[in-house]
Image 1: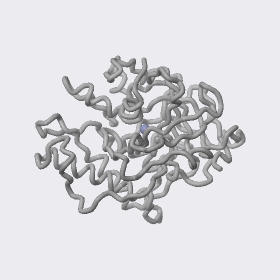
Image 2: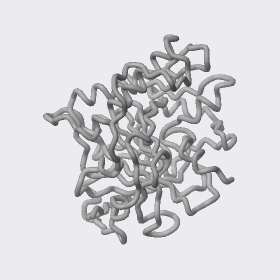
Image 3: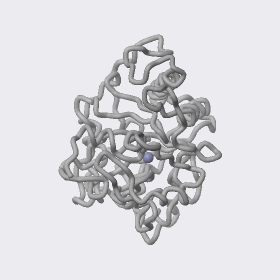
Length: 334
Ligand SMILES: [Zn+2]
């Protein structure tokens, strides 16, 4: 099935942003992070605008996230055929003012479809050979961390979602997707992260607008009224790859989407180094994600959609490695 580029940007994975709209006529699909393993497999199919998709969350071959046994793979360091970001830092042109900053059901995100030229990088290990070109569609952040390193978790996890646009006809089931993931550590003496701060301010503004619509102060979809913002959005350029720690290596493995339909078509690349933010910034991030309510049509009624776990996490627990090889790609950034 061919899908339009803009539809792909809107619909693609990691987030479950497509599901409330698709299910609005009946009941919203609620993902319960208190008990994801018992809850998610109950859906035999997931409604999307592509039609009902098979739900692969109950499969075990290559589900994500996983725990990465870092000590085991340290000796298997590999160099990529094409250094990561060598194109990404030089191609792609995004004006900060043209980006959108949705708060979705399980995360906060940035849609990159407003970029004049979409950022892209060449990545190895995909189903179409090494060095294939992948376009960055969006990125988003989960509270909690989905992937653990030697069973250690951090405070949040950033996912930059890429698709190989040369594949042409694809769906979640058959597409060629790669995600760059960065774990986020808050506090621990870290100063405020200014790159993160400019994003956080926009998400807080989105939350203020959602809350205003839920309380009836703002009609859903009313873009002419801006609540709680005293000045216009900053200008300047934005490059999503600037969020990735300089000099990091990556853990790479074959996995899946981490939310329904959990399609097993994603190559994961997890930075070994963390993004650092201040404790205050981390708390503000949790506040935005955990206090998001889903506006139900024009009635101004709102409800929580995803249910974070008891610690406020919207991350899926690690899934069985099931014999998969995790590689470490070293010297990936030039
Ligand atoms: Zn994600």
